[in-house]
Length: 64
Image (cartoon, rainbow, N blue to C red; front, side, top):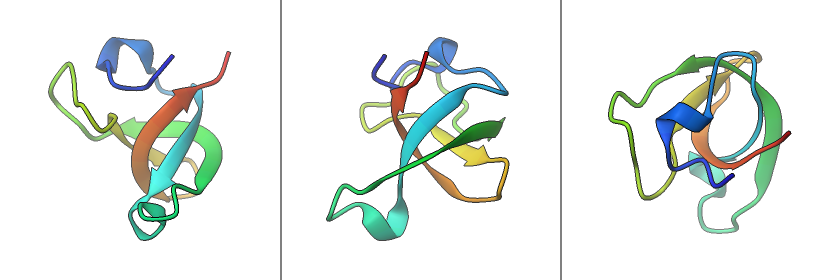
């Protein structure tokens, strides 16, 4: 799943995000969702989330 639709992501989901500092390189960071920060149901660059360790970024991939 691409991470562009809010309904694909729930608290506790395992995801891969791109951090603001890594946007140019596209480096992905894995983690578990603590909070969903984007209020809209869709975002073309990925739903913004906060991971359990406090890192914030946009979801690029939802792991199953």
